Amino acid sequence: MTRTIVESKTKTAVLGFDEPFCVIGERINPTGRKKLAAELEAGDFSTVEKDAVAQVLAGATILDINAGVVYNSNPNPNETEPPLMRKIVELVQGLVDVPLCVDSSVPEALEAGLQAAEGRPLLNSVTGEEDRLEFVLPLVKKYNVPVVAISNDDTGISEDPDVRFEVAKKIVQRAADFGIPAHDIVVDPLVMPIGAMGTAGLQVFALVRRLREELGVNTTCGASNISFGLPNRHGINNAFLPMAMGAGMTSAIMNPVALPIGQKKIAEKKAEVEAAGIILPEGMEDEAFVQMFGLGSTKPRAGKEMEAIRAANFLTDNDPHGAEWIKANKPPAKEGEEGRGRGGRAGGRRRRA
Image 1 (cartoon, helix red, strand yellow):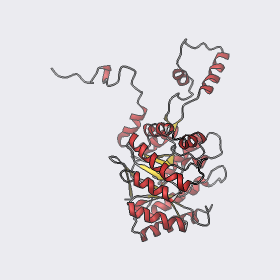
Image 2 (cartoon, helix red, strand yellow):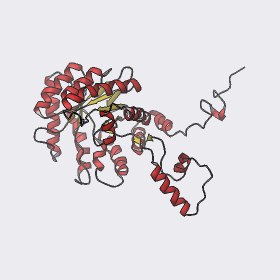
Image 3 (cartoon, one colour):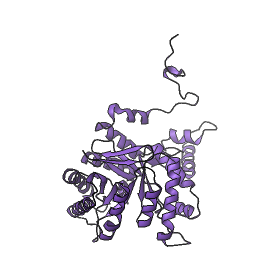
Image 4 (cartoon, helix red, strand yellow):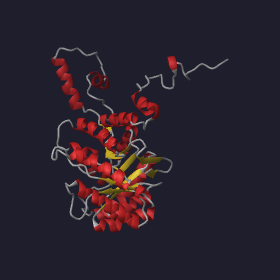
């Protein structure tokens, strides 16, 4: 049975057909996040720190680390990204003890991340492009790490799932030439947006089955790609992830965190409530208010996608006795009752005299 081992200094994440679905947290990535990019260029890592902790608390088992910010002061990522990657890897693994995924398109940044990472990180990524194969596969062999293999090559990304399968097969075969086993290849079959291609879901489910049955590899994807450009993206993601799991997908690069509701939305809802003639308790805290009206939370928490994944793990018997499902859905202890057992007694059962 295929098992891909990813490790931190003391913890292990296992990707496998009979293992719980592995969530690879994607938030530590400045792509499309102008505020984070500006912070990183200024040497401010406060958002990185918050994102690392929040993702682990929400249920991420691996954290993806991407340092791909283009500095205004120096637009050459070959110079700026390697030291930044090293800094972020060292910082994150000092905050949380989960395995890391070193993610970059800059070869020197990949190696900088591998050198800084403790344990056995996942490398993201190799493609079927010849220059990428020639640089990344020796790195995978040198550091004895698993790698994400993305199903595109020198011709680009094909809309034909058979072509994407052949690219994945090529990467697995080329990796074997370096002595890299198939269980250390995690294939990303490339999820197309369902809004642009109506068969995108069917394509990826069929591809995942073929990759599992014919190549015997684990799989991953950028989960939110499926819903790109559509309204209520969480609703689509929530359906897609369990279906992909049912087809045999074993991990996803995704955001496990539901972001806090902002003050603007809270103020708008309060105005709406007031206009309806509803009188709120004096001094009502914002958290109690948003909970009452189903707006979410003022604090980061696990997103709905995590709920769907945990339910699917339970339904596929990858959560024995539903322990993780019950733990995730257990009401939080009231203030002052932490550590109390049944009936609110400290320590649970009474001791015998």
